[in-house]
Length: 106
Image 1: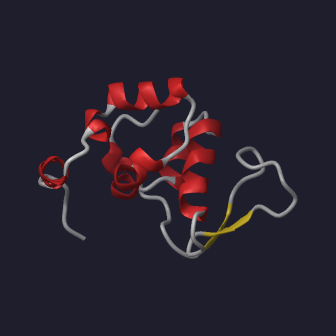
Image 2: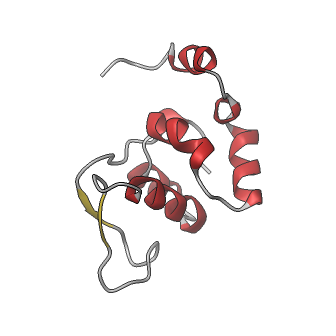
C-alpha cells in the first residue's frame, strides 16, 4: 500500500513491459494507449504488487484517482486503499478539485 498517492509516478502512456512477478506471460508488453489497457494494468498492479517500489513504478497518483471508480478490484483491496486514501472515495468533481488543490503543478 502506498503511503502517499503523490509518490506514485508511473507511466500513463506508451508501451511498457511489466515485470514477470506482476504479469506471468511470455509477452509482458502493454500498450497503455490502447483502450482498456491502462485500467487493466492498474487492476493487475493493485492486485499483484507486494512492494512499495512496484506501486511507485507502475501507478500514477492522479490517474489512479481518475480511474478508481471504474477499476475491477477484489473487495479487500478496494477497502484497504479507500481506508488509507479517502480521496479515492470522492465521487463528485468538486471533491476531486479540492483533493488536487495541494498537488504540485506539472
